[in-house]
Image (cartoon, rainbow over all chains, first blue to last red; front, side):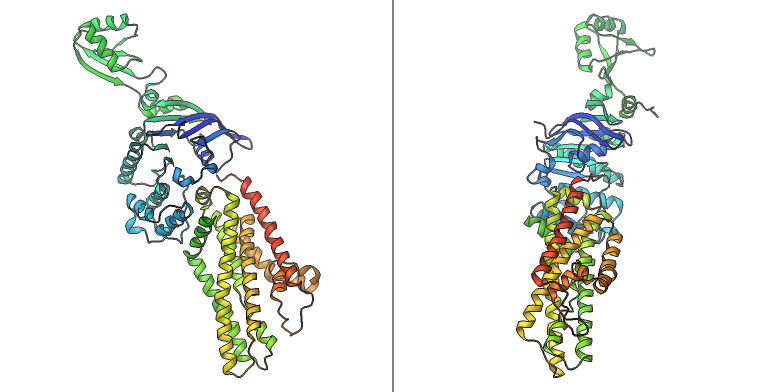
Length: 299
Length: 246
């Protein structure tokens, strides 16, 4: 059973079908990017997962249990929502103290997470004096308070400066490295590409692509391999004999769709062809995103 | 539930609004008691008893309850609150209980203070002072009213959600609608949640010194207040449970 399971999830708001029969899992120890254009249904999906909106159909569960069925929700799931808000008249530390009491977490965790997000120095200032980036860090601190098994992050890099984004990237990888399941929605495709293991792409509330980052970047056929050798003709014959299609490049070299560099290398070795260059050729995440969602690439 | 209660009480005492309203309640109650104790004369025991019902905690705690609940929508903190406590009905109940407890505590502080200050002034002036039994009687009645209206304020805030509209509505009911009803149709006004039923619990005499015979008996008044609280709890629970937090 995966830490996060979404099966046949649909949500209708009056005449708008915001999410339509969406299904995917988020695995432990992996960062899953949840991508889609504005209005695609990402936030609605995450809110349904967190019990904030009621699904019209389908289920969204953590280890088989709905969020509101979890005994200590914040010890299982940490969430940062896009519009994370705080009482402006309360300090950052007090905000976390309230959440620690509610979630029955040890009070020492407050200082631990404040330190983890770099807010210790500002902890006793009123939240109304915080910058957007500081508020975002506070929201992340709140999510980490219960040291949860699952992190759900909706546009968590909003308001963060470049060092903050780099810190976020490191934090995500560290959490995944500790076996946590991380689901992150973001519109910053380049940022996501550096952080995630798996990708889920939705548009108009429907699934458009799902798989490892490599699979999604490779398109329907998977990643292609670009290879240069001392004898392209001989290599091409060997590849075709192995049942692969090959496209010669005008400047020299071959493109072999849907075959990994490793397999191409093995075939070249068996054919006795020396290789000069070998590498995976894939789309950028932006290209993949636009191809999957029906938009146009700007690159 | 106890964790939720602790959290709500912590929320309450870590905002300036709470401190400001406590100070205002204490200051206003003291002002009335000090002025009446200094300027009045020929006090009877009943006058002194009535003087110590001048605990304005009820007004402030009902507003605090409204602000505490409707403020969750105003500051858009309702999402993080529900994430921390996904059982929305327990959350609502915890808020009501915590504001009831805060009301009782606040009233305890204010009532004991005005009793102490008023008794000292009246003693120095050689006026009548209240018997201990009267002081105890006023104390528990003040505490009960403050607790009940604290819970009611949370219910009103959860139903109305618009903080300004809820505050204006409560002030209108407390200072315009219910006094008018009590003046023109006391048979209906005595069931009101901010003046009528609380008046039945306090059982003070009127400004003219005459008994307010139309008031509900204490027991019935408590039941009426519990009815108001139950009504708002049910309406708020239905609204809270059925709504998507988007």
